[in-house]
Length: 395
Image (cartoon, rainbow, N blue to C red):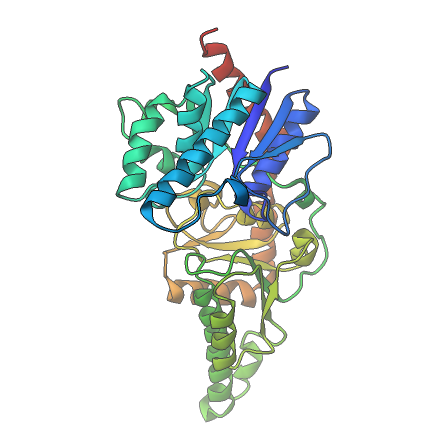
């Protein structure tokens, strides 16, 4: 079997890292010789099966040129490059698959020195992964020498220029985490909306917090007005029952303190909860009713696929680079809203909260993502692509 090196920054808990672990373990089961090359090791990483070798490529403190000036940065960059070259020289993989940003350019440059084909995986919005300036210039110089470029969406692939790069792109599905392939919950779902992701500006959890609080505030106001209206006597029984509804946000990140303050200022301390990072997300969200994703940009979000596979009704921003619209047929198996569209989110959230049967039917249709993104459907496509690249490489 061929030997493949998978190159990434770390195995810290995130969507891309989960794909890397799933891919590595799948290829190992299929008989590939796998070496996982990570720049560094972090705390709270995904576990990796013991028969997959792991090599660290970052320079050690003893190898680091001290200081923070431009000369020291150049020296340390060159030392990192040389160390990575040393790993390729020792390991001699038949194929290198790299993930994200600068890693892709570094892998292409160093792999070329040894005639090793390199596939670069672009996971998010390439406008952000390769912003204007030095990084985009570096990408445009190196990507023509890649053996292939894996993208998560067609919109992602369309970013790259024709005439040397665009022609090398390949859109491949994100494999679902096997932990989410448990049987979807069949009982009455809990009055819970949930979200999963890093607490940061791009994920924009502030929008879902404000929308959820707005739904409850509007309902309370309507109930009060109708209860005191002489012309609407008895109409209160038709007001949607939002008692008991809560919002639970799983994950951690730099915006935690800011979001805690927002929850408190809205008077939502007992209704909106920042749950932090949990080890078993599937179990934590499996009985919830609604999944929210309010990101400004995404590739093909693992968290969205995972929630849909469990039968939650999703509401997601129709964000670049088009991942959510690849899996959500709005009005059928989920709802798409504009980026930043808090009023649309409030309206859609209110509709799902007020009509459990409508929400449950939508969630049931959402389970269909398993037919495309289950590991036994998605990962063989990755393997076939790797073999295609190897078969077309000279020698």
